[in-house]
Length: 194
Image (tube, rainbow, N blue to C red):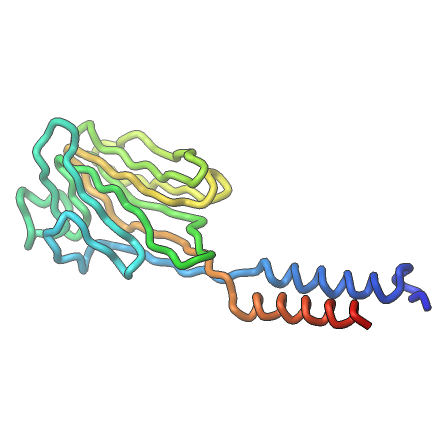
């Protein structure tokens, strides 16, 4: 018997139900992590924030390594207390994410006192968003997955500069959504078998 509203009858109704379940399943929540460097107390060249943001500080080409995150670890004058001060260093930032999670937005503030400060946000596709230095003023570099694909690395470098307020938005699939998708599949399979 054919439905008045769905010319295909029962199969079209099932297709509609399945489509609604798939629509719901693409919805996800987000986890936002902001690193302001105020609680970083390590002098190690590798450190992790919230188990997600991994820093690897290396030499700036041709210069001796010199950096700081607070006055207590200072190997030179702090440009900006409680910011990541790089006066001859690079910070390669990577992320530890659970399966299915990805970063769809990232931003970082930076300021330059010399001429060698730069920041890059790199997407999975290899596309890069970067801004030129801004002498003596804070600038914000930001990118979304719409611009460069899911974000996988942030590169910072400076001979005299500071970085602060690193923010990442991690997309987290909802377990209830995945359960609904599974339930819809079971219902469709059961009805198909009748």
